[in-house]
Length: 313
Image 1 (cartoon, one colour):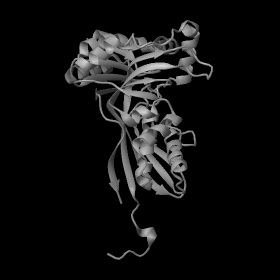
Image 2 (image 1 turned 180 degrees about the horizontal axis):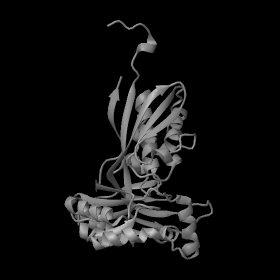
Image 3 (image 1 turned 90 degrees about the horizontal axis):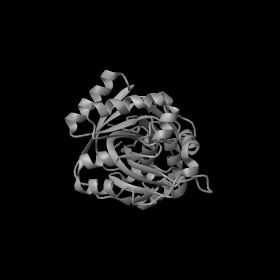
Image 4 (image 1 turned 120 degrees about the horizontal axis):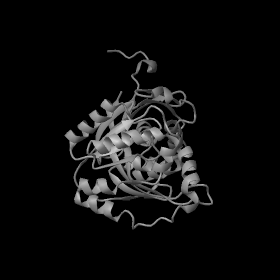
């Protein structure tokens, strides 16, 4: 075969997959002078994924497909696009990239779908441009983009402090199974934190490590029953204040025998911990039959963070 010119050369693409997360525990302190709430959280990465396909382009751009893709911003506010620009700026790259997002994590659902996009874009652009950034360098860039982005890079199970961006790996044995009740209506994170302040912000207690000792013990033992009993989210009352309908999937999961049920992050996704993969499917069926969710997902965790799953020319 004869190649007649550069324009005939196939484009190089890099495909990266990054997981969504569930907050096994999320404890929120009083707002600080910087306007941020300090948090102490335990993240678990779960097998609900975002994929980002990066290719060289004359200018930066982003497109999306999949559930709720129409709700994904495609302007400069897009977190994945900001991640690509951040890699270029950090590494001194003059090239641009087009990002195509394949959505799997709920949009504005409290499972960090946008953060997973950003983490995937960081790794994809590093690979696309051959910048050779270390994982620590990528994590540093990630922390500048958003509180959950570093965890989407790291994955598995970790304790997050500060704004959630300071990570310490957590020992976890075994596999845990989840069913998620997803709502097409999102909840803005800023609005949930504002509702938290209205409800109890002035009474919020300083954060300590003591509250989550039973949860960490359950993870180390691989004890799903104990983990379910220890699930906790300080933002859940605020999410329920803004969206009272979330009480319904919480109740359905409890009636279906979930080991524990909690609003994920700032919501509105409801996460139910199951005894087994089959039990997760049964809880999902209960969500569907009750009509309390726009979509239902099942997943397991913990899983690794962002990783390259394909490189093509």
